[in-house]
Amino acid sequence: MCLIVLGWQAHPDFPLLVAANRDEYFARPTAFAARWPDSPQVIGGIDLEAGGTWMGVTESGRFAAVTNVREPGVSKGHRSRGELTRSFLQSDVSAEEYIAQLNMGDFSGFNLFVSDGCSLYYASNRHAQAQKLSPGIYGVSNHLLDTPWPKLVKARQAFASALPGLPDESAFFDLLADRERVDDDRLPNTGVSLAWERLLSSVFVASENYGTRASTVLQQKTDGSLRVHERSFGPNGVLLQSSVISTAV
Image 1: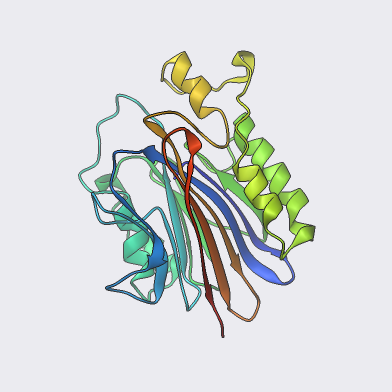
Image 2: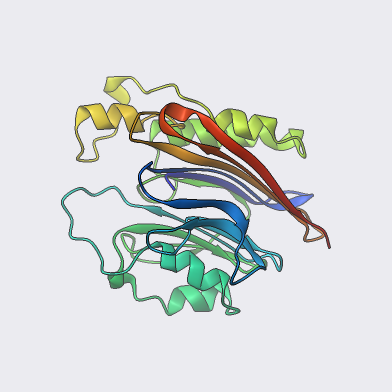
């Protein structure tokens, strides 16, 4: 997943709200968001190549999401980053305990959010210290937390503007669908070619072989009930499927 914006205790009725795009090669096999066959309390997509997930939530309120750090030429870790989220969602340890026991060097560069419902933590193996996050709005793409890349700044502003309209989620999907690319003079320099920097500069990435494969809006209410709405896409941003999974307390 390449863009996550979330509100943690930023709305009185929705303690956790997430709007996220997962960007990946279309050739990588993927299962759409659903209850996991081996862990039906978990709702999320599955990376069928490595077995992990980019984002998931449980009926008990556990949440995890991960993005990669864009660092071309750096040696890869020997474990999939999707294990970070899967392992947390299938465990019962606190977010703080989970972060503390991670072997950070086993993985390629990552950004990780984990919440046990009581606290939300951010960790990265490209940042010195994990952070317990205070109530607020946060965002991450493929660098560190709240790095002011133009698309992330834009997405966070749109997210904040959309909060008063809840439970209507249309404005969150509007921000995730934004295909406007950034002018060359505002592009970040992340070590990839100019053509790739241009392609990746939009919130929604669309091309033939690589792009946004899932846009997800997750709503958790104060009573613990959940709504996960995922829109899945194929090459060039063609909509393939829209699904909603809800739980009641």
